[in-house]
Length: 320
Length: 273
Ligand SMILES: Nc1ncnc2c1ncn2[C@@H]1O[C@H](COP(=O)(O)OP(=O)(O)OP(=O)(O)O)[C@@H](O)[C@H]1O
Ligand SMILES: [Mg+2]
Image 1 (cartoon, each protein chain N blue to C red):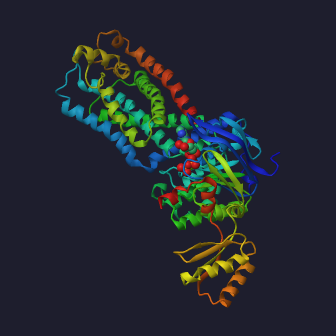
Image 2 (cartoon, each protein chain N blue to C red):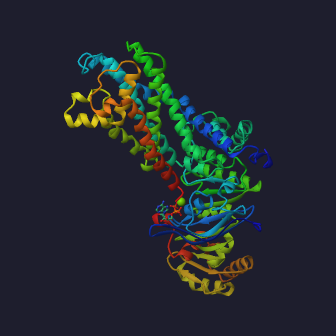
C-alpha cells in the first residue's frame, strides 16, 4: 500500500496569513532509512514535521505516513509515530521514570507494560542512574535523551526528529546520534530535520534540501556533493613562482580548467579518477623539481552544496 | 520488548480510554503536588495568612452592617477568594505545558486529546477540595462556628461549582497568554476583581456605584450564599442580586461556563491551525 515509502508528501501547502511556510513541498522517505531534511532558519522544516505528525492541518496537497493519510486517519497515524519536537517536551517536575511511565500509559500500554518499557528505555538511553531524579535537574543532553526515549515508547514505525541536537555539546550530540542509529537498526524510519550539515551527512542516507517552503534538491549525501562538482585535487606549492608549472601539471589530469590562488599558493581542479590523478601529479611534480607544501584530494562539503543550491549561505556561516 | 508487544491493545472502547487518559492526566497533576510540597504550601499559605491577618488584625475594627460577627462574614469570603484565585493556577499549568511542547506531545499521541483539558479540570477540583478542607480547619481553630449538616455540604458544593466555572477561564487564558511569565501578571488583574466584591467588606459600606459593582460580582453571590448555608447569614444587602444570592450562586458559574468552555475548546482546537 505504501510501496516501500514510510512518508510521502505531495505538493504540501501551509499558509500563515500572507506567509507561505510550505509552498508545494514534496518528500518521499524510504522505509528503514534516515532521511535528512536540511534547510536554513524559517525554511519550513518544523512546519513540515508538524503536518506529518498530525499536529497541524495542511492547506493543500496530501501526505501519508506509514501508508495512512495524515488528515483522514490522524488517530491511526498517531499510534505509529514518535515525535521529538524542537524543544524537549518532557515534564520537568516528574522524574525520568515517572515521565516514561506516564507517556506509556497514555500510549495505552497499560500499567505493567508501561513500567517495564520505562525500565528498558532508561537503560537504553543511559538514564538509569538518574531515573528517579526530577527532570528539572537534568542536563540538556539528558533531557534530550529522555525526550527521545519518550518518542520511542511504542517502537514507532516512523520517528520525526526536529533538530534533535540543537543546543547540545558535542558529546551529547554524539550520544543522540548513537541512539538514532540504534533505532534504525531496529527497523524504524527516521525523518530528521537539521541545520547542521555535518549531522545530515553523518546520519542520513538521503537528504532533501528545503528552502522557502519548497524542496530544492533530493539526493544521497554523495550525490549532492557531486552536484557541486565531485572531488578536487589540490596542490599547495612553496614558491609563488612555481604556480604556473603546477597549473600545467594539474591540467594534465584535471576534468576542467585548474584554478589557482596566488595568496594561498594553491592550485586546484576537479578530477574523476582520484587515485590515478593523485599519483600522477605527485610523480610529475617531483620530476619537475617543484617544491610542494601539501597535496591532496578534497571532497566538497555540504556547505558548498548549500551555497550552490540556495544562492545564500546558511545562517551559521553568515554569523561566523 | 518486541514491537508486537508494544502495539496498543484494542480490547477497550473509546469511552474506556477517554476515562483512562483523563485519570492519567489527573495522576500527573497530583504527582506534581506530591513532588513539590512547597507549591501546596504557597498555594495554601496565602489564604491561611489572609484568614489570620484579616481575622485578627482587622477583625476587631471591621463592622458588619446589621450586626453579627465579622468572622462569620469573613471566613466564607476567604473560601471564595481561594476558589477565585484558582484560575491562575489552572492558567499557569496550561501555559507552561503549551509553551514547553508537552501539550503538543500529548496531541501527537493516540490518546483522547479532550483528556488533556478534562484531566486538568478534575485535578483542580481535587486540589480545591484539599484547599477548602485545610482553610476550614484553620477557620474552626480561630473560632468560626458554622452549622453542620446539609447546608454545610451545599455550601461546599457551591464553592466547588464556582471553581469549576473558573477552570475554563484558566484554560482559555493559559492558551491565550504567550509565556509563563505573562501568566504571573494575571494575579494583578485577579486581585482587584476579587476585592471589589462582598468578600472582605459588605457592599453597603462602599460608595454607591462601587457597592453596586461589588454586589453584582459573581463571586459575591457565592460568598453570600455560603454564609446563608453555613447558618451565619450576616452582612446581606437589600438589592435584588443580594436577596437572591443562592439562585445567583448557581446561575453565575453556569453563565461563566457557558461562555468560557466553548472559548477554551475553540482555543484548544486552534492549536492545530
Ligand atoms: N504559527 C505560525 N504563525 C505564523 N508564521 C509561522 C508560524 N509557524 C511558522 N511560521 C513561519 O513559517 C516559516 C517556516 O517556519 P518553520 O518553523 O517551519 O521553519 P524552520 O525551517 O523549522 O526554521 P528553524 O530552523 O528556525 O526552526 C517561517 O517564516 C515562520 O516565520
Ligand atoms: Mg524549526
